[in-house]
Length: 325
Image 1 (cartoon, one colour):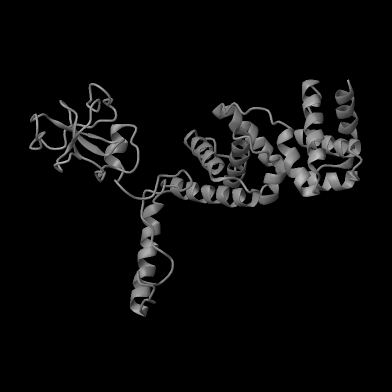
Image 2 (cartoon, rainbow, N blue to C red):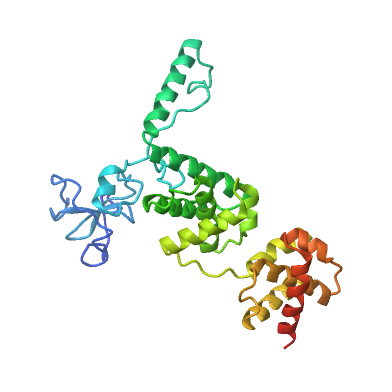
């Protein structure tokens, strides 16, 4: 502001000198003109300022943005999305774009509803649910996404990976890959594929433990959707399992560090090719404890990694040989 209390002039803040067209919107109102040069006014969104497009005079600062709160990447999103509201998510079958009626029979002030109002709310919830799932595909998607969220909670998978699994399941549904396969099996396979795509190590056996499907069916379904959808899933790094197994066994930092060195040596030597990464990680952890003179039995490691002791003994020799070369 100037000494007289009027608007301030900022040099270099005009569109041609310092403001890109992407950051400056069109003129807010044709009746609004610059009080000094009678030029057109533009809104700079980054700075929340109203300034003259000709002389750079800042007419208004700290403006309230009345525009949409979410980004729109095409004209369809710009017209369909509301200015406010919860963000769209793939974890809900309708992407969270519909309203929801609370299950608690209380009003906005927390007071209990009368018997008549409770009966009315039950009828509204029933019809609301019917409108949200109008066909078999919506009911299929709603049940599958609920299963993905339930299994992901049991595995401790973050929200971003749950979103990835939901997208994979939607692609499988749209591609007609579900006939002849169970909803739970495809959902579990989608979650397993998402954990591998996002670099969050979860074995098929771990996914099977929180699902209602056998590990063999999950593996078969995973291979099928991986091939049909061309997911390009990278191979699992055994080091992704070392941290979780070491935490379960309460290993020291020295043991963890040596185990990661053993895994890297085994990977460089190609020992992991054709081997299950869980077995490589478990054997490396057992070998690291042996090298660091820490007492950890093979049965303890086998229980933490959910593999057999025979697997640990076989991989143990291979990992040590690769490390000592």
